[in-house]
Amino acid sequence: MSYHETPDSRLVVITGGPGSGKTALVDALHLAGYRAVPEAGRAIVTDQRAIGGSLLPWNDPALFDELVLAMGMRAHADACATGGTAFFDHAIPCTVGFIRARAEPVPAHFRAAVARFRYHPTVFVAPPWPAIYRRDEARWETFEQAQGIHAAIVEAYREVGYRCVELPRADVATRVRVVLDLLGDGDERQHGGGQPLGQPSVYEQRSGL
Image (tube, rainbow, N blue to C red; front, side, top):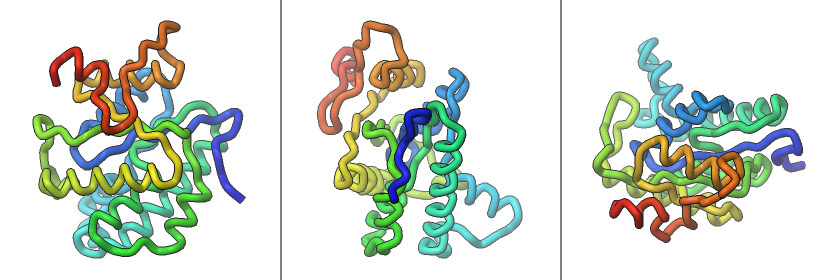
């Protein structure tokens, strides 16, 4: 059995490598009245540091991945049960991308989870953006590592049939407008702005980014 969106639920993924502005976008969508599902990995790191715990991605990445996967499955089930539109800051296929970025084989049960727990067919991708990239206590990767993670995440979604739309390197308000317009939640003009990954967005062309 596969757990897809239902007629009463729409599960939309905002993803990308570390430090690309996706969390700021999800936060803004939440302020606009949508349900937001926070990034599991960052939450785990924050909680573990608060209690002096050792379940951190640089200590035991495989165990960390298992916990992120478990939280992702639960978040998916909760969103389906609640109904309405939910924006996910990362989702289950992202975990596959992180594993591949370490050049490790993906366990079969992770592949099974990706196949079983499906999201909206359009996935919004925040591209690497050196101008805003900052390392912090939960974002330990270099920018070069973040680029590799980004590429691995995009491939993880593409190979299982999702349409990846690259967001413009633009302010949060513009990104919100792009997402909502492409989902049909913006104004009736539906001018869009996001483009299939690999093509410059309309907003990037206009702004010279």
